[in-house]
Amino acid sequence: MQVSAFRRPSLAQTARGRTRGQALVFTAFALVGVLAFVGLVLNMGFFLVQRRHLQNAADAMALAATWRVLDEQTSRVYLDSAVLGQAQSMATQNQVSVPTDAALQAMYVDQTGATVGTVGGGMMPVTSAGVQVSLNGAFHTVLMPFVGLGNIQISATSQARLVPVAPPTSLTTMVPLVIPRASYVASGGNAYDLYSLAAPFLDLTTSAGSGGSTAPLYGNAHTSMQYWSDGSHAVGTLAVGSTVGLAGAGYATDVQTGLQDNVRRQNLPNDPTYNGMGVPPYILLDVPLCNPCGGPTVTIVGFARFYLQQSQISTTHLIGYFLPYVVDPTSTARQSGPLQGNAVVVLTT
Image 1 (tube, rainbow, N blue to C red):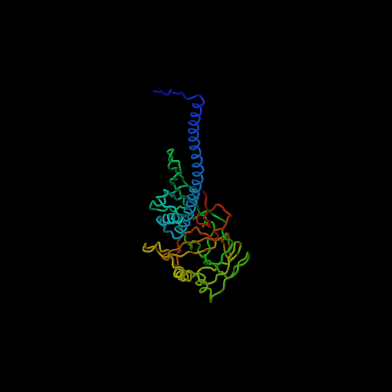
Image 2: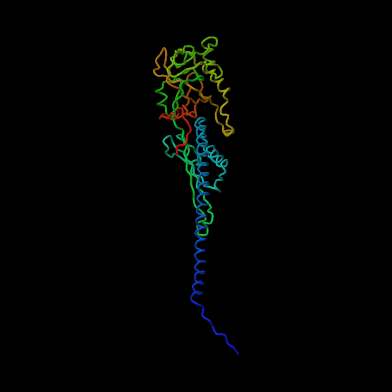
């Protein structure tokens, strides 16, 4: 019987085996490193895309909600649900599902950017001048779950506000009533009576200077005053720097008749959101501002927009509120001023 002898591996063979084992280990580590790098690159790209998508949605929501704030300020309904609905609608249009894709927090801000209330809290504060939107969602990573990082939180914040801009320098639609600029500035959000001056009636056939043009005369002075107030007849052009004569007293009945016709023509509110809410009929008026305002002529220094309910139209009072309004959305000549002044809706954050 022949017995084979056991042969011990040579040192060279042992070294080759160890090298192959080490190569496998190094390859495994290298593969993990490559996968980690690929995952990092992919995650960074996807993260930036998702972050930009969320920011675009937040910007659009803040702008849309602030435009709705302007609508609510104009109608003086202050409907919080309409502002919230506008923000949510814009989220949907930007393919962001709330709260599935991102949690939404929206706050009302005043003219300085300070928070004054919660959008969706049931009430829109009267001092609201814009909306700040915050979106917070989860970014689902690629490959990172292998190291315990399946989700990364992303957020986007945007704020839009009504920012005062330079007022218009001329106007071709207005009522023949003049307001002292000092009274306009001092009114703030308080009610104001357009009959605070004893005889604020303008004779628009006497406009002169600085680009102004006279209004046509419709029969006698009383008929003209009625027609200039009804919102459908030409009233000429008044410009900053124009001088125009005061018509004197005795025209309150004519203005009342014209404004009542103006109510019928404007047919406000016409927003279907307000259907069934009992919002009273109102009109929006453009009124010239004067300084100085002593007769027999006044100098025009600007224009304002005025909210007047039909129930407040009489021969003794025209009580309403000055409003914020947008004449030129592209204006960039920003300035400080009362919230009821000319403004533009802009992103501020």
